[in-house]
Length: 133
Image 1 (tube, one colour):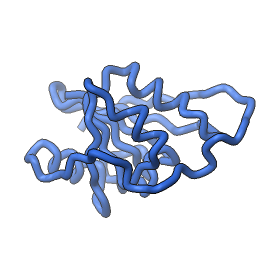
Image 2 (cartoon, rainbow, N blue to C red):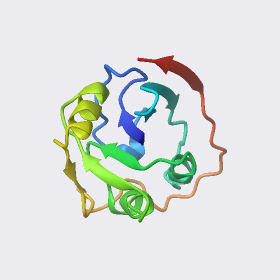
Image 3 (cartoon, helix red, strand yellow):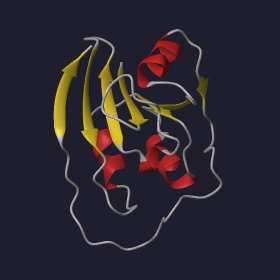
Image 4 (tube, helix red, strand yellow):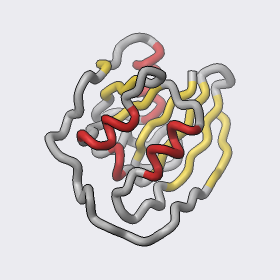
């Protein structure tokens, strides 16, 4: 299973971010190989290019601390699910997911998206660092 976690840091010991679309990092975890890759969220605005990139990676599951309606609409697809994990590390969230202990979300946890709709002109960059757990 391919899993994306919004996190405050780039390691599996990092806390799950309080807002998925504004996470400092994203951790891409592959449960088949028990490996992960982390990359910085360098999206300065809130135009959701990062969400398209994450979906393009073949992600089947997203783990969030909270998520606004616009990001939720983009990543909650027929091929992917969104799960809630608060006050835990990325590793704890994955362990809880794999053991069936995370709540699957059917709607966003936030009523509105932060800064959605503001125009920004920039590219999206991704700093990659491969790690194995």
